[in-house]
Length: 127
Image 1 (tube, rainbow, N blue to C red):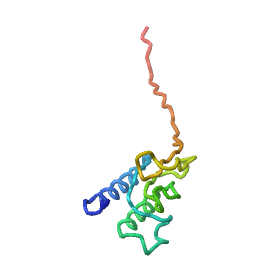
Image 2 (image 1 turned 60 degrees about the vertical axis):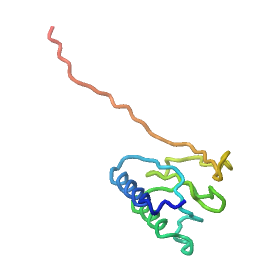
Image 3 (image 1 turned 90 degrees about the vertical axis):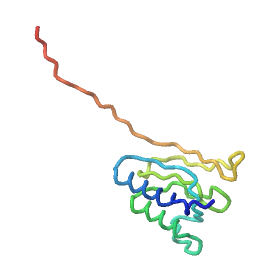
Image 4 (image 1 turned 135 degrees about the vertical axis):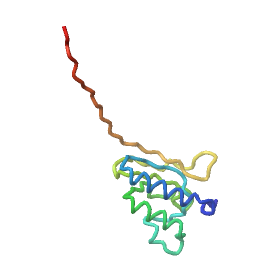
């Protein structure tokens, strides 16, 4: 599948740049169709496309963490889990072929922190 001619490559990098500037927590998952054989992909200069190199540099520039480090379809890393925190994804596992697909299913635990804000205000007793 060729996503490059449709402008999706540029839109994806724009979106990552925007979330990177926002300083908000994020996780991005999916089949990105960049045929990475290993990470960082620039080690495999023979097979890395210009678009894949641009995507890699965009992730690096925004200090993103790529969590998948094994092949998800045949001999390529196509499916990625990307976040802005290194410890956001734990227990990542390759679950094998997904039924009806040529991709492997992934399983992971997403670690999120929450906080509870308490609102307080002064109340006057006029009695």
